[in-house]
Amino acid sequence: MPEAASLPGTLGAVQDLSFGSRLRGYLRAIGAVVWKDLAAELRSRELLGAMLVFALLVILIFNFALELDVRARQTVTSGVLWATFTFAGTLGLNRSMAIEKDRGCLDGLLLAPVDRSALYFGKMLGNLASMMIVEAIVLPVYSVLYSTNLFNPGLLLVILLGSIGYTVVGTLLSAMAVQARTRDVLLPILLFPVILPVLVAAVKASTGYLQGLEAVDILPWLNLIIVFDVIFTAVAFMVFDYVVEE
Amino acid sequence: MIEVHGLVKVFGLKPILRGLDLRLDEGEFVALLGPNGAGKTTLLRILASLSRPTAGEVKVGGHPLPARAGEARRILGVVSHQPLLYGDLSAEENLKFYGRMYGVPRLDQRIAQVLKTVGLWPRRRDLVREFSRGMQQRLSIGRAILHDPLVVLFDEPHTGLDQEASAMLDEVLQQVAARGRTVLMTSHDLTRASDLAERIDILSKGVIAGSYRRGEIAASELPEIYREVTRA
Image 1 (cartoon, rainbow over the protein chains, first blue to last red):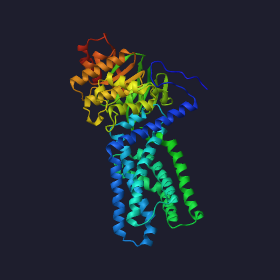
Image 2: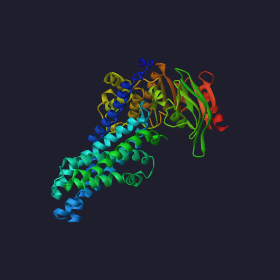
Image 3: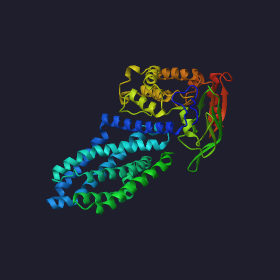
Image 4: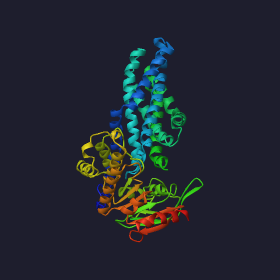
């Protein structure tokens, strides 16, 4: 292991090149970005407020528009839920990256001496946390409005995996879209075609759990979501540096 | 500390920097003057590894860019047009965030020291969005020097500041330079540049068209020289 050598006169410039030290720095940077996003959001409540109001309005509108009986409700539940999460999530993704861009803070992040993929994972985890908070509020409200029990461990797992896939791709594409003047319109246009496989799989797996299908019927959809999550996490890890570069 | 040879930067078909050469030794304070669109900000962004050069060699602290940008960023502090601060976080929280990103040891002590240096210690718990432009700029300087960088880049730091805030900024700039840090500052203010810097470089049409050490020319001659060089 190479010896730690500090650069004279600079703080925090200990150039310990060991894997452990670099990993600690990497994780510390991810943690710092998540902490910063959540601390700023808890104070302003801009992003969560907008996502939550939008999500609740969507399920309310569907509730009145569809006028469903109990049987039909079970059939459409997964579709309504994922449409709600997807549209509310887009609002959050757009805002989360716009905050960085508008005040030039993206440059502040890019100036940090860390691998830029750490910034991506920090933003991605922040977005995922926001999405999970919205989902945690929407699910009980939906259960009451539609008289459907959504607290099924299998369904919750699908929601978690689907949300990861959504934010993995969404964070990467929002970093691309934020450079454009038409970013609000551009993000959904870029995002929805790419996340289609994970959305279809999430809707199918969710319906399977709600209708009590056998695990063997649900597993292929679940596997598809997991594969999507892994592939797009790897893609984002490799390309984020180029996406944010001028 | 900063070495630039034959730097070319082209945006689309428009060349901004056309084979620029620049050298700053350790502890030097250089003011970079030039008209709007001359490429001052572009040069600083390349030195800060925020933009890639189209051609040419760039080294910061001996680290070639963009190949070893991570190492270069470790010894670099940047103050840009924008404060690079989060309005919904307090002054202290902003520095805490950036301190964690840079892995600054004994962070709380260092934050207190920096906030006192830039005169914001009494306002440390206030949200940045409530700060005036001058206070944001002071905090921005605090952010840039938090990890005690060897090289500090200032991009028109006096823009939008009133006289009092500008004087305070000058004091901070002099403190940074007095600690032996290498400083490159872009400016439109000829008087201020000649007061602060040891050397004045004039950037025009994508190259350094003139370079003058303090004492080589009188401050009163600078406006005329600047006009001649940028007109040529």
